[in-house]
Amino acid sequence: MAIPEFDEDRPFLSHLLELRTRLMRALAAVLVAFLCIYPFYNHLFTFVATPLRRVLPDGELLAIQVASPFLIPMKLSLVAALFAAMPFILYQLWAFVAPGLYRHERTLVWPLMISSTLLFYFGALFAYFVVLPLVFPFFAGVAPLGVSYQPDISEYLSFVLTMLVVFGLAFEVPIATMLMIRTGATTRDALAAKRPYVIVAAFAGGMLLTPPDIISQVMLAIPVWLLFELGLWLSKWYGVKAPDEETDSSGS
Image (cartoon, rainbow, N blue to C red; front, side, top):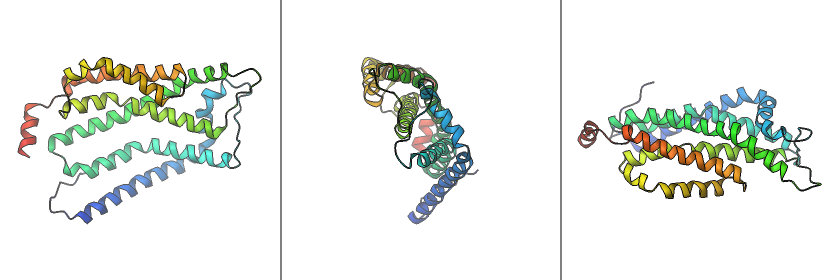
């Protein structure tokens, strides 16, 4: 799909119309994905609830609110549709901003978009397959005697979605590191010298963004630290503008 060239004389209203068109396409993609996913909400909820159901005595969650059995499957299907349509949504964003970018910047956007999308998915999968199976047995094991650990489906879904989003965003650390170095906001050596502060910040973020248990905090902090190191390593090759890129930028 061709990207329109930048036109300085293009009226502001036409930019607003194009933005509306891009937003409508993104919403249409989410709607189509939702209509495709919703009929399978039972399978989807079973998949999402599996980490918790494994530690429950009877494998059943509670629905305390009256409308929860209807609203929760819709909410879950909508979030899943948003996740599924994310590559197309990012493309619409890229197609809207591309005409205002320099030529060398356009060549970087596609790799960044693809890598950031994959890293977000990897972070969410890491939370689901690694973190949640460790967190729920811990919660069930520390429940006081006489207390039946059987969470409400609404609270459970909010908890799981928060964990998926937090870990998905945390896995964007290599992209953020490389962008900071490439844009000249800092240097690789300066970031490397701040490694102790990054480690402390990673554990502080894990404490603030995850539930108050040591498992999820450590499972967030350690990957963030390692991904920071990965960003520093990759910045050796991709973090510094090449001379021809700087010339192209200054001449544009």
